[in-house]
Structure formats: C-alpha cells, structure tokens
Image (cartoon, rainbow, N blue to C red):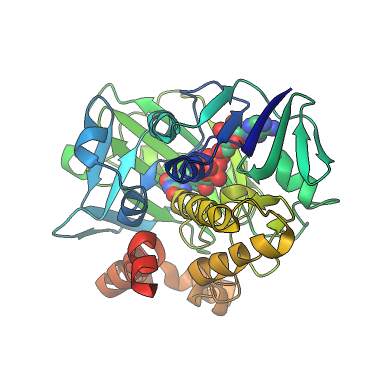
Length: 380
Ligand SMILES: Cc1cc2nc3c(=O)[nH]c(=O)nc-3n(C[C@H](O)[C@H](O)[C@H](O)COP(=O)(O)OP(=O)(O)OC[C@H]3O[C@@H](n4cnc5c(N)ncnc54)[C@H](O)[C@@H]3O)c2cc1C
C-alpha cells in the first residue's frame, strides 16, 4: 500500500494551492483527482488580484502559451433592460483565465505527487490516520474535491448540503468565437447582466479567442427558463458573438453562510467548495479556494505532525477571520422586499455610484480587502 503524510482529495485551485505550500515546507503531499489534467471545468474563469497575489503568480510567465485576459472595466445592466453601464478603471482590476489551463498550471507547479484519473470511492479511519480506496495510507486527509467532495460527505453525514442551504446553481459554456460581434470594442469588456430580483446574474466574458457565457443564481427554481430568457436577451445585444450551439454545462456550489459545513475534525480539513466558501454576491469561489488551501497548509505545518482535533482547530478561526462567519453578508438585496427590488433594480444599477462602488468595488472586487499574504504579514 502507498503511504503519504498528507493526502489532498481534489486538484482544483484549492487543492493545488494547499499542496504548493505544503511542498514548500517539505511536507510529503499527494494530490488525488478523479480527472486527468488538463481537464475541463465548469467555471467562468474570472480571478481577482488578491488571488494572483496569494499565489505569487508571475503574470508574464503564466501568459506565455496560455490565455490571460486583463480586465480594466465591466459592463453592468439588467437582463431584459435597455441600459448597460460601462465602468472603467485606470488599472487591471481582474483577469480572465481558462480553467483547464489555470488548474493544470497550478497543479504542476505544486510539485506534489499526483495520482490522477483516480476517483476516491472509499474512506476509512485506521488508528489516527486514513486509508483511501484501500490503496493509500495517509496521516492527514484534506477534502478539496469541490461541492460533491467525498471527504465533505464523510465528515458531514448524513447530509452535506441541508435542504435550505444557499446553493448557487449555474450553467455555462466556453467556446471559440469565430466571428466578431457588431460592437467589437464593447465585447472586450466583461458584461454582467443581473436578474431583476438580484438573486443572480448572467455574464458574457471574452478571453483571447474564447468567450464564456453563463448564469448563476441563488434560487434553483426554474433555472432552465431563466437561462433561456438570458440567452434570448444576449442574442439581441450587439456585443455578444453568435452563440451557435455550444455544450451547456451545469454545476452547483454553496456560498458561505451561517450554518456552514463542518470543516474539520481530528486528521481532516475541508477547503474551497468542499467547505462552501464562495462569496454570496458574486459567486467568486476561486479566491476563497486558494486562500483556504493556503490557510489549511499553514495549519498543518504549525501542527508539526500532531493532527488531533485541538491542533487543527485554529483553521476554523482562520477561516472566520478571513471570510467572516457567514452572518454578516446581508446586503441591500435581501433587505428590500422582492417587488420593490425588481422595480428598482434597473434604475439602481444604472446609477454610476451604485455600479462602481457597490456592485463592482464592494460585491465583486472586494476592493477594500488586502490579499491574504499582505493581510497575514500586517497581522504579524
Ligand atoms: C458556472 C460557474 C462559473 C463560475 N465562475 C467563477 C468565476 O468566474 N470566478 C470564481 O472565482 N469562481 C467561479 N466559480 C466558482 C469556482 O469555479 C469554484 O468555487 C472553484 O473552482 C472551487 O475550487 P475548488 O478547488 O474548491 O474545487 P474544484 O475546482 O471544483 O476542484 C475539485 C476537484 O476535485 C475533483 N474531485 C471531485 N470528486 C472527486 C473524487 N470523488 N475523487 C477524486 N477527485 C475528485 C474534481 O475532479 C476537481 O478537479 C464558478 C462556478 C460555476 C459553477
């Protein structure tokens, strides 16, 4: 039987970031993933500067042979509305990447031992450690397998996702844009079109030769209908290339909320989507996955081989320090009655102050938050 110190289940941005930091500290880490990389992933691929900073990503090196689109502005509006506001910045405020490239790059960079094309099917305790798939023994187990992570299910029996949990349901496609839309200049600027109830939004994001189109909603009812309505609307705009007939793919994931999943026990930690950490207003999950991966690795390094519950408990406090306790994310959409919200949404979103300061700076870019590496350095 194979052995390792730390087994990370899932090689997405969360798992690979954790592995990267562990390997830097000389910890023997294995990443096991059901997929063979590079693999396709349902995700729009929008990343923020905080994520880039936490990863110490060399932008010039990454760009060499991969797609990385600088984002210096956004277009915002309401689905079905006539007004689209363009907000620009005098600096790069985000990037758009292709997840198949990004995740592969991070996984290779981690220098962890990789076991790919191997879904985790069985998990059992053996003494203070773990046996996975009856083939691999580990002292410490990390659940980084996304929303349906088998470690999260094991740790949160009987139900990893309570019925009323705030679940983002999403559908998207990424395809080569083989013709230029009428308004080619606008097409370069990512568009965010909100549902009138502000429970979600659709996007159209250009990344080099590719376009990613999709919707995400915090309300799972009637997704096919609202998705179809969004596509009809998009086809009527001048900035979206012909949609053709791409393969639309769906996925779901939890946002951080007050009754979050149990994220640790003796010898086990969850991170990223497995822990349900995405931001509720934007659905951004890549940065929380990366940051929680780094925080999980620090906790393991600090534990110096003692993986009992008490030694791992600081991880929960680190998540709360960084992402809040899930109860403070109430914003005006949930405070204003639904009917008033729907009536006011087009007007509110057309106001420059609301578009820039609330929607973009506060909800999407979380501009007041320092990157994790700087925040930790400041905290000493
Ligand atoms: C349509 C859509 C658009 C999105 N757009 C954005 C965006 O633009 N920006 C953003 O920040 N966030 C976005 N998100 C959210 C983001 O994709 C996730 O939050 C993020 O990828 C989570 O990373 P992770 O490492 O936790 O998990 P994942 O990236 O999901 O990685 C989990 C890995 O675990 C593996 N795995 C799963 N089960 C098993 C198993 N049984 N055994 C072994 N391996 C397993 C999978 O193969 C996968 O490689 C989007 C999500 C969706 C659905």
